[in-house]
Length: 549
Image 1: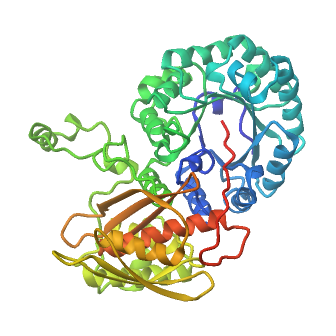
Image 2: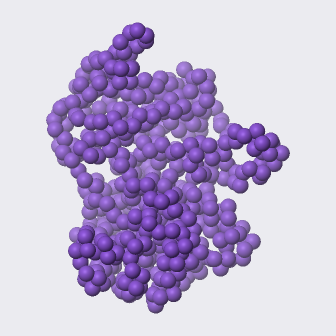
C-alpha cells in the first residue's frame, strides 16, 4: 500500500503525519539515542498512529544505517504499519545507503534533499541554479530505482525565490517524486508568508496534482506550528513534526500541538479540506490517547525535559491555580478547559500498586500503560518496583513509568553503578564513596570530597573514569507529590563540543544523581568509543553528526 497521491480523496481530505523525532529530533544537542532506544520510540510512534516514521540518515553513520534497517524490518514490516523513511542528500552514495537500509520495509520511502536558496547555493553548495535543476531530478530518478515512494525537499525553501522553486518542483515531480516537501529550514518565515508560499506552489507548479505537498519547519521564532496550520489552509497535506517539538536549535513543529489544534478546531479546518464544517471525523489518524505516553517516553530517553507550561503535554497544561478558574472548573470544566486530559491519555485517576502487589498485577498494569517487556526486562523492572514499594506506601503509574524507563533503557554493558555512600551535613565536609563496574567487568572504588554531596559523587566518578567532560545542566523534579516521592534527575554533559544527556529516577535523589551521571557517561562512550575497546582513561575521539533539512 503506497502513500496516496494528492489527487486521491483519501489524502485530499486528511492530514498525513510524518514524524521525524528519530532523525531531526535526534539532532538536538544531547539527544543521541542508542539502537534499542530508537526501536522503543519507533514502536510507540506506530502505536500513536503516525503515517510515516523518518527513522534516520543511513549514510551518516553505521549506527544510523543499522537503526533504519532494524526499524524497517520490525516496525515497518507490515503493510498495516507506518511507512519507514530514510533521509539522503542528493548524492548517489547517500541514496544507495538509504535504499539498502530500507529494503526490509513493506512501505519504504527515500527522502532526498538539495538546497535551493541563493545563500545556500553560493556559500554551502557552491553551485548555480542551473546545476541544481539538473542534479535534483537526476537524483530523484536514481532514488526511484530503489523505492516507489520518493520525497524531495528543496532545503531552505522558506528563503528561496519562488520563481526558482516552481520549475525545480516541476522537474522532480516529473522525475517521480511522490511528495514535495517545503522546509522552513531556519524558522524564518511568518504564517502569512508561509501560507502564500504554499498557495503559490499550488497555483504555479503545473504537475503538483501528482504529488503531496508537505511542510517541514523549525521554531526559531516560535512560529512553526502557526506556519504549518496556515500551510494546511493553503493546500499542504503532510506535516513533518517531532514529539515535544525537539530538533535542531529551537526545535521543530510539535506533533502534539499540531494534532490537537486540528482536533479541537476541526470545524474551523474542515472546509479547507473539502469537508462539511460540522463533520466530527478526525483530520489525522493519530490515536490521541497515546500522546502523553509518547511525550513522556521521548523525554525520558532523550533526557530532554518538557517545560511545565508546554502546550498539551506540560505538567501545568491542565492545572488550575487561580481561585476564579477553580470555581469555574467546579461548575463546568468547559469554562477553562478546551479539551479533556483523558483525550491525550493523561489519566488523573492514577491506579496504585503496593509492596504486596504481585508480578502478574505488575505486568498487567505495565501492559495497560503500553509497556511490552521481555522476561529479562520485566524481571529487572519488577525487582526495582519491589525496592521502591518498600520505601513508598503507594506506587503510582508515574512511578511505574519512571521505573521501567530507568531500568530497561540503559546500556548494561558499559559502566554500572554498584555503590553510593555519602556523608554530609553542617559543618561536615561532603564526602562520597563510589563503586563502579567498568565495561570489562573490573570493580573500581574511589572517594572524593566536594562542595555538596552531588559534587562529591561526580568528582569520585570522574576520578575513576578519567574522561574530560563539563556538567552544563543538572535538574531535579519529583515524579509525584509527597515526601516519599521518587526524584527524577536529568543532567547534560559537554565533551569535545558534543552534548550527552543522562536521566534516572530514585527515591534517593543522591543515588538518582549518580545514576543519571553514569547514564550520560554511557551515552558518551557508546558514541565516541563505538569502534574501539574501552580502557579506563583512554582518549576519546570526536564524531560529528551529519545534519539535514
